[in-house]
Image (tube, rainbow, N blue to C red; front, side):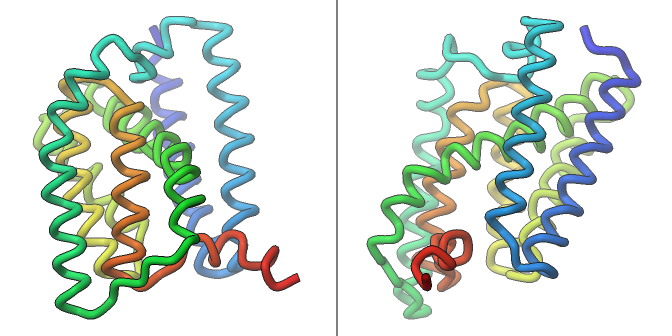
Length: 211
C-alpha cells in the first residue's frame, strides 16, 4: 500500500503536469515535446512503482478481468455521445473528417489511457483513499479539473467535464483504466473532427508535414 505522503506527492505531480500542459500547449505551442516529456516521466514512474509494489497496477486500474463488464457499461454512453457529436457538427456545419483522424484514432487511446491514469487513478483514486472526501465531491472536483485542462476551447471544456463525470463514477466503482482510456481516445478524436473544428494531428505533427 502506498503511504499518505506518496499519494499527496502524486496529486501534486498531477497538478504540475496540468500546469505543464498550459505552458507547452498554450504558451510555447510545443505539444509534441510536452507529450514526450509526459510519457517519459510517467512511464519511468509507473515502471519504478511496479518494481517496488507489483500490486499497484491492479490498484490503479491496469486490469483486464473486468474489461467486458466495464465495456458493456460504457458502450451505450459512447453511442449516444457519437450521435450527439455528429448531430452538433451537422447543425454547426463543423464536420471536417480528414484522413488525419486515422492516426489519431490509433494513437489517442494511448494518450487517453495516460490521461485517465493521472486524473482517475492518481487524482480521484488518491482523494478517495484519504477517506476525507465524499464521492460526490471527488467526482465534481475531478471533472472540473478535467474540463479546465481543455481551456480555452469551451466546447471541449463542457464536453470533457460531462464525460469526466461518467469516467469518475465508473472508475471509482470498477477501477479499469483501459476501457476509459480507449473510450476517451476514440470519442475525443471524433469530437475534435466533428464539433470543435480542430485537427490534433496538425497540432502535434504539423511540423513534420511542413518540412
